[in-house]
Length: 221
Image (cartoon, rainbow, N blue to C red):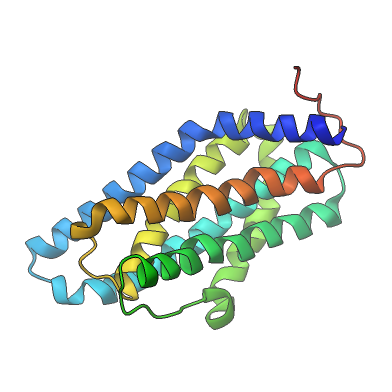
Protein backbone atom coordinates (compact mmCIF):
# COMPACT_ATOMS: atom_id res chain seq x y z
CA UNK A 1 0.00 0.00 0.00
CA UNK A 2 1.42 3.39 -0.99
CA UNK A 3 1.88 6.16 1.58
CA UNK A 4 -1.00 8.24 0.23
CA UNK A 5 -3.28 5.21 0.15
CA UNK A 6 -2.20 4.26 3.67
CA UNK A 7 -2.92 7.76 4.98
CA UNK A 8 -6.34 7.75 3.31
CA UNK A 9 -7.11 4.34 4.77
CA UNK A 10 -6.09 5.53 8.25
CA UNK A 11 -8.52 8.44 7.90
CA UNK A 12 -11.22 5.98 6.84
CA UNK A 13 -10.54 3.78 9.88
CA UNK A 14 -10.61 6.80 12.19
CA UNK A 15 -13.99 7.79 10.75
CA UNK A 16 -15.38 4.30 11.32
CA UNK A 17 -14.16 4.33 14.94
CA UNK A 18 -15.38 7.84 15.81
CA UNK A 19 -18.88 6.75 16.98
CA UNK A 20 -17.30 4.12 19.23
CA UNK A 21 -14.98 6.78 20.66
CA UNK A 22 -17.85 9.17 21.43
CA UNK A 23 -19.81 6.33 23.04
CA UNK A 24 -16.80 5.26 25.12
CA UNK A 25 -16.08 8.73 26.49
CA UNK A 26 -19.76 9.31 27.35
CA UNK A 27 -20.15 5.95 29.07
CA UNK A 28 -16.89 6.41 30.99
CA UNK A 29 -18.11 9.69 32.46
CA UNK A 30 -21.52 8.19 33.21
CA UNK A 31 -19.99 5.24 35.07
CA UNK A 32 -17.76 7.55 37.10
CA UNK A 33 -20.83 9.67 37.87
CA UNK A 34 -22.63 6.61 39.25
CA UNK A 35 -19.56 5.73 41.27
CA UNK A 36 -19.46 9.24 42.78
CA UNK A 37 -23.22 9.20 43.40
CA UNK A 38 -22.99 6.14 45.62
CA UNK A 39 -20.00 7.60 47.46
CA UNK A 40 -22.06 10.71 48.26
CA UNK A 41 -25.13 8.63 49.12
CA UNK A 42 -23.14 6.63 51.66
CA UNK A 43 -21.44 9.80 52.94
CA UNK A 44 -18.07 8.36 51.98
CA UNK A 45 -16.77 11.33 49.97
CA UNK A 46 -13.61 11.47 52.08
CA UNK A 47 -12.75 7.96 50.93
CA UNK A 48 -13.41 8.69 47.26
CA UNK A 49 -9.76 9.37 46.29
CA UNK A 50 -8.60 6.14 47.96
CA UNK A 51 -11.37 4.12 46.33
CA UNK A 52 -10.69 5.78 42.97
CA UNK A 53 -6.99 4.91 43.31
CA UNK A 54 -7.76 1.21 43.75
CA UNK A 55 -10.37 1.22 40.98
CA UNK A 56 -7.89 3.03 38.72
CA UNK A 57 -5.46 0.10 38.86
CA UNK A 58 -8.21 -2.28 37.73
CA UNK A 59 -9.50 -0.07 34.90
CA UNK A 60 -5.98 0.88 33.73
CA UNK A 61 -4.85 -2.75 33.56
CA UNK A 62 -8.04 -3.70 31.72
CA UNK A 63 -7.51 -0.78 29.33
CA UNK A 64 -4.02 -2.09 28.56
CA UNK A 65 -5.47 -5.52 27.75
CA UNK A 66 -8.04 -4.20 25.27
CA UNK A 67 -5.56 -1.72 23.81
CA UNK A 68 -3.13 -4.59 23.16
CA UNK A 69 -5.94 -6.56 21.51
CA UNK A 70 -6.87 -3.66 19.24
CA UNK A 71 -3.31 -2.67 18.30
CA UNK A 72 -2.14 -6.22 17.64
CA UNK A 73 -5.29 -7.16 15.71
CA UNK A 74 -5.14 -4.01 13.56
CA UNK A 75 -1.51 -4.67 12.64
CA UNK A 76 -2.13 -8.41 12.06
CA UNK A 77 -4.93 -7.60 9.61
CA UNK A 78 -2.41 -5.81 7.39
CA UNK A 79 0.90 -7.59 7.92
CA UNK A 80 1.53 -11.20 8.98
CA UNK A 81 4.84 -10.75 10.80
CA UNK A 82 4.46 -12.17 14.29
CA UNK A 83 7.49 -10.66 16.05
CA UNK A 84 6.75 -7.20 14.71
CA UNK A 85 3.07 -7.56 15.65
CA UNK A 86 4.08 -8.46 19.21
CA UNK A 87 6.36 -5.43 19.49
CA UNK A 88 3.67 -3.15 18.04
CA UNK A 89 1.09 -4.61 20.44
CA UNK A 90 3.26 -4.02 23.51
CA UNK A 91 4.39 -0.52 22.48
CA UNK A 92 0.87 0.53 21.47
CA UNK A 93 -0.64 -0.58 24.78
CA UNK A 94 1.86 -0.18 27.64
CA UNK A 95 3.31 3.14 26.48
CA UNK A 96 0.25 4.83 25.02
CA UNK A 97 -2.12 3.74 27.80
CA UNK A 98 0.21 5.44 30.27
CA UNK A 99 -0.15 8.65 28.26
CA UNK A 100 -3.94 8.57 28.05
CA UNK A 101 -4.65 7.29 31.58
CA UNK A 102 -1.97 9.14 33.56
CA UNK A 103 0.23 11.70 31.80
CA UNK A 104 -2.48 13.65 29.95
CA UNK A 105 -4.87 13.66 32.97
CA UNK A 106 -1.97 14.76 35.19
CA UNK A 107 -1.15 17.67 32.86
CA UNK A 108 -4.81 18.63 32.48
CA UNK A 109 -5.46 18.43 36.21
CA UNK A 110 -2.36 20.44 37.07
CA UNK A 111 -2.46 23.19 34.45
CA UNK A 112 -6.17 23.48 33.61
CA UNK A 113 -7.82 22.60 36.92
CA UNK A 114 -4.91 23.76 39.10
CA UNK A 115 -5.09 20.63 41.23
CA UNK A 116 -2.32 19.37 43.48
CA UNK A 117 -1.63 16.44 41.16
CA UNK A 118 0.63 13.48 41.90
CA UNK A 119 2.46 11.49 39.23
CA UNK A 120 1.67 7.76 39.19
CA UNK A 121 2.94 5.55 36.34
CA UNK A 122 1.81 1.96 36.79
CA UNK A 123 4.30 0.56 34.26
CA UNK A 124 7.14 1.86 36.47
CA UNK A 125 5.56 1.31 39.88
CA UNK A 126 3.47 -1.83 39.31
CA UNK A 127 4.84 -3.73 36.27
CA UNK A 128 3.70 -6.99 37.84
CA UNK A 129 0.10 -5.76 37.49
CA UNK A 130 0.05 -4.30 33.97
CA UNK A 131 2.51 -6.45 31.97
CA UNK A 132 0.47 -9.70 32.25
CA UNK A 133 -2.57 -7.83 30.89
CA UNK A 134 -0.51 -6.65 27.92
CA UNK A 135 0.71 -10.20 27.27
CA UNK A 136 -2.83 -11.61 27.29
CA UNK A 137 -4.04 -8.77 25.07
CA UNK A 138 -1.35 -9.39 22.46
CA UNK A 139 -2.19 -13.11 22.40
CA UNK A 140 -5.90 -12.34 22.00
CA UNK A 141 -5.08 -9.82 19.25
CA UNK A 142 -3.84 -12.64 17.03
CA UNK A 143 -7.03 -14.66 17.57
CA UNK A 144 -9.99 -12.28 17.49
CA UNK A 145 -9.80 -10.94 13.88
CA UNK A 146 -10.63 -14.36 12.43
CA UNK A 147 -13.21 -15.16 15.09
CA UNK A 148 -15.26 -11.98 15.42
CA UNK A 149 -16.38 -9.75 12.58
CA UNK A 150 -15.39 -6.10 13.11
CA UNK A 151 -13.35 -7.19 16.14
CA UNK A 152 -11.08 -4.14 16.04
CA UNK A 153 -14.06 -1.76 16.23
CA UNK A 154 -15.54 -3.61 19.23
CA UNK A 155 -12.23 -3.88 21.11
CA UNK A 156 -11.51 -0.23 20.30
CA UNK A 157 -14.85 0.87 21.76
CA UNK A 158 -14.18 -1.07 24.98
CA UNK A 159 -10.66 0.25 25.35
CA UNK A 160 -11.86 3.83 24.77
CA UNK A 161 -14.51 3.30 27.46
CA UNK A 162 -11.87 2.00 29.88
CA UNK A 163 -9.49 4.82 28.97
CA UNK A 164 -12.19 7.42 29.70
CA UNK A 165 -12.96 5.84 33.05
CA UNK A 166 -9.25 5.54 33.90
CA UNK A 167 -8.55 9.18 33.07
CA UNK A 168 -11.38 10.40 35.34
CA UNK A 169 -10.32 7.98 38.09
CA UNK A 170 -6.75 9.28 37.85
CA UNK A 171 -7.92 12.87 38.19
CA UNK A 172 -10.07 11.94 41.20
CA UNK A 173 -7.44 9.74 42.85
CA UNK A 174 -4.39 11.93 42.38
CA UNK A 175 -5.46 15.53 42.86
CA UNK A 176 -8.98 16.53 41.72
CA UNK A 177 -11.53 15.11 44.14
CA UNK A 178 -14.49 17.37 43.31
CA UNK A 179 -14.55 16.52 39.61
CA UNK A 180 -18.32 16.97 39.19
CA UNK A 181 -18.09 20.75 39.60
CA UNK A 182 -15.46 20.90 36.87
CA UNK A 183 -17.44 18.69 34.51
CA UNK A 184 -17.03 20.80 31.37
CA UNK A 185 -13.26 21.06 31.72
CA UNK A 186 -13.07 17.37 32.67
CA UNK A 187 -14.89 16.53 29.43
CA UNK A 188 -12.32 18.46 27.40
CA UNK A 189 -9.38 16.87 29.23
CA UNK A 190 -10.77 13.34 28.88
CA UNK A 191 -11.70 13.70 25.20
CA UNK A 192 -8.20 15.01 24.45
CA UNK A 193 -6.56 12.34 26.62
CA UNK A 194 -8.56 9.55 25.01
CA UNK A 195 -8.92 10.55 21.36
CA UNK A 196 -5.29 11.23 20.52
CA UNK A 197 -3.47 8.37 22.31
CA UNK A 198 -6.15 5.70 21.85
CA UNK A 199 -6.77 6.36 18.18
CA UNK A 200 -3.02 6.67 17.64
CA UNK A 201 -2.27 3.35 19.35
CA UNK A 202 -5.28 1.41 18.09
CA UNK A 203 -5.41 2.66 14.49
CA UNK A 204 -2.68 4.99 13.23
CA UNK A 205 0.34 3.39 14.93
CA UNK A 206 -0.22 -0.21 13.73
CA UNK A 207 -1.20 0.91 10.23
CA UNK A 208 1.89 3.12 9.88
CA UNK A 209 4.02 0.20 11.08
CA UNK A 210 2.47 -2.21 8.58
CA UNK A 211 4.04 -2.14 5.14
CA UNK A 212 5.48 -5.35 3.77
CA UNK A 213 3.03 -8.05 2.84
CA UNK A 214 -0.07 -5.98 3.42
CA UNK A 215 -2.96 -7.64 1.55
CA UNK A 216 -5.66 -5.12 2.46
CA UNK A 217 -7.14 -3.13 -0.36
CA UNK A 218 -6.32 0.59 -0.24
CA UNK A 219 -9.04 3.12 0.41
CA UNK A 220 -11.11 3.46 -2.78
CA UNK A 221 -11.08 7.08 -3.70
